[in-house]
Length: 311
Image (cartoon, rainbow, N blue to C red):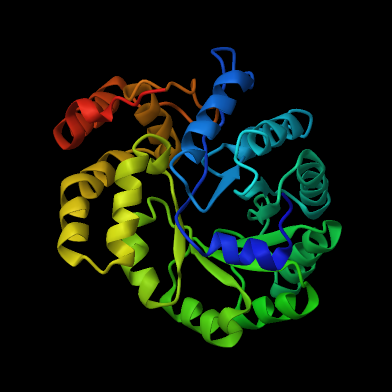
């Protein structure tokens, strides 16, 4: 099944999103067979879309040579009715290469991650995102964070110039900026929450017109992630408060102990729930034994034997 940009925009905004980790063996090589199984397993819990080779998928560590195999494996592992969106990034020329490779490998859309290291004026950011959009026929979501923070006027220019720009994913959390973008663009775009551990920001985001978000913990506790999203959509404040208090705040305490743990803790969660995905690639480091033990205690306290995922 193919998704027009308009159909992709609708699909992405319809439900919970997630982004699979990328599996590596002990030598750091892409480990395709368990990756395919993991993507298919996640898809079985019916997210609205999956993002392959995104931030949690360690896009920053992937080479252009291995990237197409990762996107193809993910695209072939989801149901035909589920969109598969691929992360792209770095400088403009490389981002275009990744975007074209993703489209050729079967992705239904791309997520434009911030350009590598370089800060830029709005005109430069506009040209960068426009080049990515112009390079493919599939839908594009721009990830607003770090070195790529777009003003509402720049987003509006891009939406006018790029019919296949379908989404705005926010990883900054600037209320003034979000309100300006939302009121200027209306329903032209789908608005996606993209803060690390997005659940703790989800209630505030929903009030500003962000209809969905990407859940990292969906990788290892998908039923819990889905129940949180259901409570959010159902305005069940007691359930949200309970889940945040019991799980997410202690989880954040572990995640915030070291830089890069936002990714490493997901792979630790997978190891602890019986679905190992291998180590992270440098410059990230895996959780220390103490931090992983604390995560194990949290999972046991919150979920007990239910935390052990079945194939």
